[in-house]
Image (cartoon, rainbow, N blue to C red; front, side):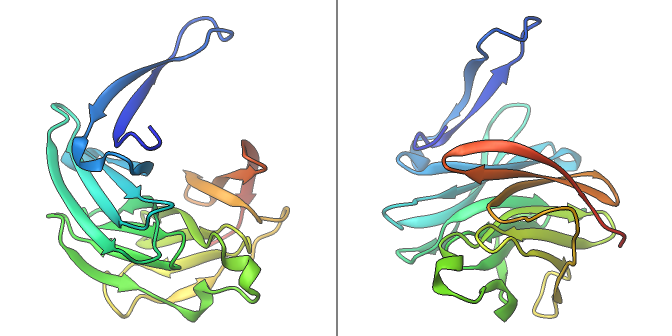
Length: 216
């Protein structure tokens, strides 16, 4: 629900040719005029975590949590205000810590299970050579059950592995991948412990590019 400050559900039908109907689940007035971006379902705690940003006004970036049973608002954590940032996507670890990618500022915010902003992961590797390669930086992010994060840099196509220690000791490395250019990569999703899929945003379109595979 871009710009509406809420969450919608697309209801599938038996006929693949039918236009999917969007049902509004949350219409949060606290988030009006902001963009509802990436989200992750934290099944162990029965909640949905949503990254929220203001693309043009830069009023603030935030992480919002909702109860999946009642859609009750659990917390809203402001990550940055009146700065050039954009909370784009979010992943969650087994302890309930959330990791939010900043597509404008090139960093990752860490928010604990109670909604407290506890740390920000920064690395020189998150800034790609050439100013034109940083219009959109860190984007899709996922958490691997072995205890690390994978995040993609949209304009450069770099894929990073981050040891998710939840503090300043988080180690960042670039993953060497094969099977095609990852430029304009957007969302990420693990299909198995060693397989990951990515979507690609280009010319205003979203299309699936398949699977990038590497051995950990």
